[in-house]
Image (cartoon, rainbow, N blue to C red; front, side):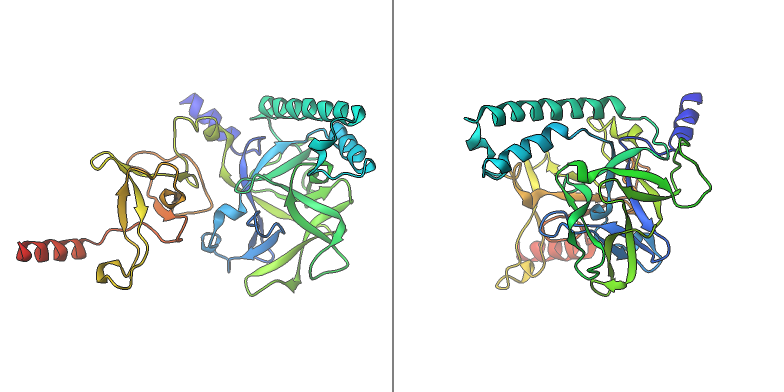
Length: 340
């Protein structure tokens, strides 16, 4: 009992390794991005209902410690001076200075990964510099130093990108209720201050991208975001042995010896007018067998428990949910019996 009590107390504070979402109460929306085709950050509004956001996996970030990027910056500088690009840097290793800088950069990256691993579970304090890794795309929140926002040309673009000095943010309290050095609570309103540009992550409702999304930009105006816990580090460390909400899984049928797949719609066959499930032994590497676990409250991705966790299974390829219709099955059974 004492162990569980201590865990629940610890989970009231923000920790390195926690997965969170950031909610703007004024505009009633979450910071989101697909992180792939479109890397810019926007605020997806949800009409006051936190569970109504369509793709909540786009809104989840992992809290990480700040990394060192001195060797990386030096490597990039030498490559540019040599007339190359980062993409073609591997062909410039005949240059001894570049080869040495590349080796230092790789050592720096290994040290960063080791530091991140050692820091898991440590409390985050106000005034601390952190990074926010977008869980879906594995890219990091960033304010661009050179690009203006798409709609608000007087502000800077906010996006996700590969880790660099531009992905470092200082955690400030939105109001003067907290001071530097205090632990950050889950549910606190924080302001994300960008070291390189001296700007805050900001939402201006005048600049809408469409009916449900507002542009997020870098501004000198302070903005507060409420920390919503998605998955605490205490459950992440058990990932190898457990399943959490928000994870992507494959469903294997022991009876048929195959994976659940979604058949395409076939207009020439009445029973195939909507996607249906079948099993395939060749589905272990197919994207057609991937399902997202959603809990009734999609803003949480905590540990699932047998007989105590209601979930929905969303097929990633179609966006449709796995379902069973008893009536149709019974009708098909009757038809089959009549045919026999």
